[in-house]
Each structure stands twice: as C-alpha cells, then as structure tokens.
Image 1 (cartoon, rainbow, N blue to C red):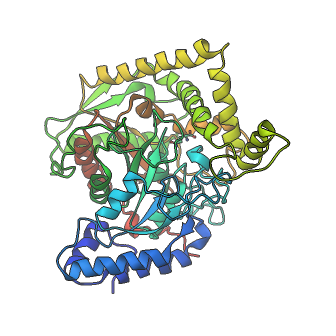
Image 2 (cartoon, rainbow, N blue to C red):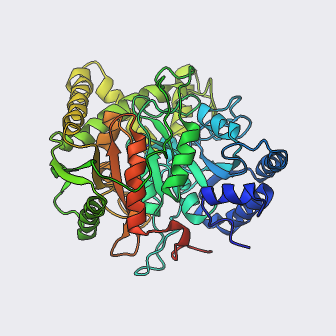
Image 3 (spheres, protein in one colour):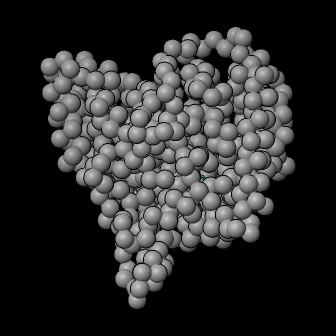
Length: 494
Ligand code: GLN
C-alpha cells in the first residue's frame, strides 16, 4: 500500500471516497509516524485516542454517504488555538495546565468539516520568535538536514515551527498556524512546504491566544497549494464572536487555478533587493519572475518606499499589544499561580516564574513604548508609519496585482544560531512583516534549494481579500518549481 503519510490531502480525500483505505487506517499511519518522528518535538500534546475516535466517526460518515469536505483528514493544531478539553499551552509555562472549556472558531470549523485532530503542535512561547527555540517545551527540529552538515540540526522557523515541521515530516497532512509578523510564511519556507496567511479579518481570532491583536491572523500549512486552499476554505468566514472578522463572502479559492496568468501584473519591489542577500535567494527570486512571465504575466517594477521602517514599526506595535494582552496572566484567572506576600508580590512571582525571557523582553519593550512619557514618541509614531506602509501597498497595487518577493532572507539556520542577538533574530521577518502591518494576504511556496541543500520559499503578496489570485499564481510557481515536499529525500528519519 502507498505510504499514507506522504500523499496529499486532495489524494487522501479521493482514496477515502473510493474506499482505497479508511480514515482509521489513514489516522493510524500518522500516529505511527508521530512515534517514529518524536525527536522532532513537533507536538506538545498528542491526542491519538481522540484522533482514532474521530476517524471512526468519519468512516461511518463515508459508509452512510454523509462525509464532509475534509472528512477523515488528520491535522495538527498549533497550540495557540483553544481546543475544548485538550490542554492549550501557547508553549508557555504560565498556561501549562490550561484546559479550555471552549473551542476556537478556526478549530471548530475544521471539526465541522470532518477533520481528525492528531494533537497540538509546538511553537515559540506566545508565538514570539522566528526559530521555535523559545518554547517552554523545548525547541523543534526541522525534518530537513543539510548534506553539507549532516550532523547539524536546523530550526524549522517560527513561531509556528511545530506546525511546519509536522507537515514536512509527514506527521500531519496539514496544520493550522498563526501569523503576526511572518510566523506561517517563514517556517513554511524553512521546511519546504506551503503556508498561507490570509487577509486580516478573513478568519476568526475567537479562541486563539492573543499575541498582537491588530496583526494576529490564522492560516494553514500543507504540502501542496491545492491542499492549502482546501484548508483555508474550511477556516475562513465571518464570526459574530470576533468583531475584527470581516462579514464578506468567501470565494472558491480554487476557482482561478487554471495555470494561465495572462493579464496579470506581478510587482517586484526594488526595496527588497537588500545588500548582502544570499546569491541563491536572489537567483530563485529572478527565476520565479521568469516562471510567471512564461505563463503570460507581466513583470513590473514597483516601489514600497517605507519598507525599511517596517521592522522597527512592528517591534513597537507588536510588543505594545502583547504587553497589554499578556496582562491577563496574573495568577488569578488563568494557569500558573505562585503565591507571594501580597497581591502585587503574587503577580510578580507568578509572571516571573511563568514567562520565558523573550516574552519578558517583549512585555518590557511594550510597557515602555506605551508609558506616559514615550507613548507619542514611539507608539503613536509607529501607528503613523504603519499607515504609510499600508499606503505604499495601495499605491503599488495601482501598477500590479500580486507582489513577488523571497519569503525570508535566509534558509533554515542551525539550532542555536542567532540566539545571542535578538535583533539578528528579528531580521528574519524583514520580508514578511510589511504584509502583516498592511493586513494583506501572503503565501509562501517552496521554490528552490539553497547552497546547504535546504528549502527556500517565494512569497506572493496579494490585494486585500484576493487570496484566490494568490492561489492561482502560487499554483504556477509550484508547478514550475517541481519542488515536492512529498518526495523530500532529506526527510530526517530517526
Ligand atoms: N517572528 C516574529 C516575532 O517574533 C513574528 C512572530 C509571529 O508572526 N507570530 O514577533
């Protein structure tokens, strides 16, 4: 029988429908592989019993003709989405024992469509990081290894590193992620898979542990563009429980995937040509433009002049919102409590013991930029620059329909690199953060291999609510790149 952990979601749905295998067999194959790939540390919590129960119910639906759009598909859920009755930690000690009494809207939608949950995937603590090294539950290992350095373990990217590694390693057919400044696109690039962050407001944030509310957006990982469209279709849509989710129709994301790019204009932003960009990334970017041109697209030069302010702006706004959002972890309402002499001491002891270094750093930066003396100079200023960054995109979209850039300025780096210098770590987000500040959709598609033999992704950024065009173009990149995460020879088998 084919290895059920290597096929696509689309093929699995066909196989389930024509009874080539059952949902129970498909789920069991993934549970077995999760055992074999345990060293990757991609999951914080595994839920095999629940998964097998869900698979059994799915098999019944296939038998009686009531199967739904994702029936029987085994998925992983980033441990930032609340799952009723299953621990949700945000990779933090402070939420270590938190069992939500309710389900997030995103996960509820996936369940309503019949999918099976294998467990909760690892991430950077509260989704703060770019390497999945800040998790209280240990770092995640990228399933890819470099032929140049076979003994070195690489980071999967972050913050949704567990979600990306799980899909690349075949221990989930797809996963949910969240992207605040790049946390879906950058790990997708590092792990050689597809990751999409839709337009801000496309998916509900209800039941997702908040990091920076004006930036956080749910999205998905999968091994093919088609699979990612299937998953995003499931989780999209208005939710009355989230006032920032948009009440507009969700189109069929796959309707335009016909390989024909005639009439489409692809913008290449000159500000993304950075000094010191590795040659292999520049080459892949040029190659990407050629692929799109040969399918009929017109390549146009565009300018996003405020790009250089995006990182400093993000690293003011995101920590500011984080410091406010994380004030709720006080030892009284949620999770960990360390008793002190009095209430203030209890707060201090609980938060001191419950948060890791990176989270504390962000809370301190956030509290500083929001403090009375600095609010105008930092926070208000950053909000103004955010507007200018958004306006850059609006102007650029007068000249083009989709923007093409590399996803990240490097491929995966060895675990431990960039740890001593937080600013260096923050630089990972240089190509993804502007999109987040503007609230636009972005997808990373695997497009090449770097000099270390590790995957590299191309990023496509679309107009607001135009994910369908992103999928159309991503499909062309995927076909041209012939990059198959499904056939990865580098899959790291224990
Ligand atoms: N790496 C970025 C950060 O550390 C983005 C994280 C994210 O998108 N959640 O903030």
